[in-house]
Image (cartoon, rainbow, N blue to C red; front, side):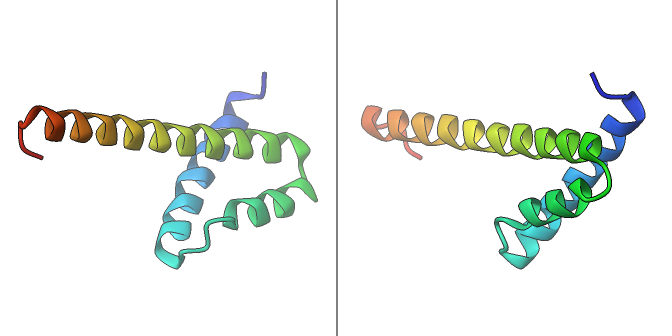
Length: 80
């Protein structure tokens, strides 16, 4: 497992990267950042990509649940 300091740096960088991606619409920016990191530190690159992927997966999971609940409620006649 990576050093906790590396994980903390990767998590902060992932949050910042996702915010920039959202604002710019460049949905693969994280790959470019990963390339930059990999040129200097494979350890930080891997921790960063893991942080990005888990956040993106979380967002997709939440979106899926929201859509599933919305469809259920629409079918049941419960509104939204």
